[in-house]
Length: 365
Image (cartoon, rainbow, N blue to C red; front, side):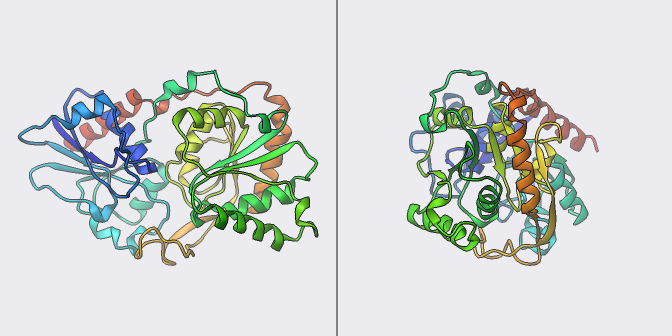
């Protein structure tokens, strides 16, 4: 079979990382693979030098039996002479109310990384068959036990968050829970690795604490450790190894790569229920915080015609978030070392085999 993969693997975004590793997983299959880049943001990696993918870019075949496109649904294009697969993520439900609905129904089959998304599309009665295939990761990185110790994070229990500074990530809930649950004299830190305007973010965090009014003197709050720089893979490795509990209070997630990486590095995980994250973080692997579905309400839609009030997302229970962060801290004495879990479920080989099984299922129907 000749396969063409189209995706934003030359960009720094989460979509870009996902496309990069998906191309690697596809390349282990016994097919003729060619890949072509697409750009959905200006976060282009100008120093892209992955030899394997560059070689795949240079390949070309006269006909493609299967074209896999990792794009936003409105960018999906149908080729009448091929099987057309869309691989996409959905962070809200009630997708049928969006303008994406007509575009994703042009696909012959759809790959999504969580059962939550598959259920969402099937409940909305999507026309193409939907396959739940997790995103692949280079799992070999978790074997590296060497790392540089960060002085500010020694002899403390370190909660951390990695993600964009956007409403969907619900950083407000994290700040509220941390300062409400932990006293300033407790040996805990909150590390926030994000991006955006530094002054705006600092003002936003200050405003939350002023409005909470837990302390009359704003200086009594334990100061968060906020990091704005873009990190290399090695720096991310160092951050994970110096921290102990990843907290992701998002309203909606499909495949959250920082959470999966935290799992791979043996850290505790605290996540929102009713999101795609519960597909790969089980109760014995992390703390799942109660949430309720509610209409999407945001001033930061990624596109003008999605994330409207017709869609739903999961609003975390902040009191339960506090309780689960406390549990994670209290149980830390039982975690004398990083608790390693089997990450082979995310390997190129495992995901490649799942893709092959889905292709076989579709072509045999």
